[in-house]
Length: 442
Image (cartoon, rainbow, N blue to C red; front, side, top):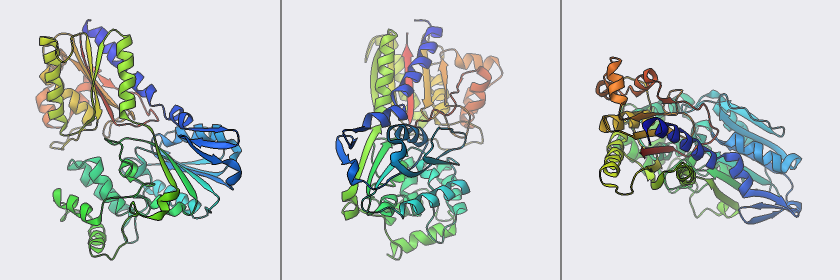
């Protein structure tokens, strides 16, 4: 297989991975109405025992799920509100849509969160709340605790992203300065029964980490949150109101998040409807139809983006040289979410940086292609989902007067791939299950 064919195959395989985690289809697979019962992942809810169905949610995939659920339940939904990112559009009648900012929360998101909690405050014991949760939900459901302003949360989020904190770490802190995260959305819905359909964007699918776990019990504590503040040396730069609230929590003067033993969770059912592994399996299936031998390495890859890129490039060289861990033509597939530590002032994201770092490692290799992209269609604060490269990328960049090493050092992968025409641009995909990385060897 020549490089042009491999590049086309990589794009097709990535599209197949997105199709495998279509949120509307995921919702339809896990929630059906039949014989007077609402069936949710095998659990039965007799419709005659339900007084009202309320639908709420937040996240990049939640609007698509809301549209699908409304198609199933129709006028049985008494009221609903879902917060989505700007520019997303869905056809719903019973469910209101609130557009808001991501990854930095904004006033629109706060208004949406307040309206959702207000709606849930009306829920009674015979009501059923359906919550649609997906990646991005944490930023889209911003409702700070008393004494902390939204601007404080915005500034703290910027600092955590810049220092390379993982999404798990960011969410531990968010849960402890929020009125909706860390199980507090479930608490707001009590005493109603609650079913949450969750599309996971976190390695390992921990319920308490996805969108900061609004419907799940929280095992983290103020002590954990404070340890993260210290780890990244933010005691001097984090907003004072946040630090004061953290200290109050450490002293027991601010309430902790609901814990697993809280009886409110006896009436809560959390269901994972899609995740990264599902996307990787979709990619593997399409690779096989294209004549490539697929191998899923892991759906749980984390760590420094550049180091992960070097390992993937080493695997490509090994496949080409020895036929291990599988002979070419091959497609190595991995998922998860790496982190970037900002050293420069350039533009890009973890996927573009991964591809640029890998391109330097495969420079000159024939018939090797690397693609990495975010399943949500966004990579960092750019209009690209990721990028694609091959063994000629470094040469082509230098022919245009670009220095790949300098641009990588400046975290400026976007401008290199933009000049080469090698950005992966999908627009919003309405799903979100972390990243997909593909190494194709012809």
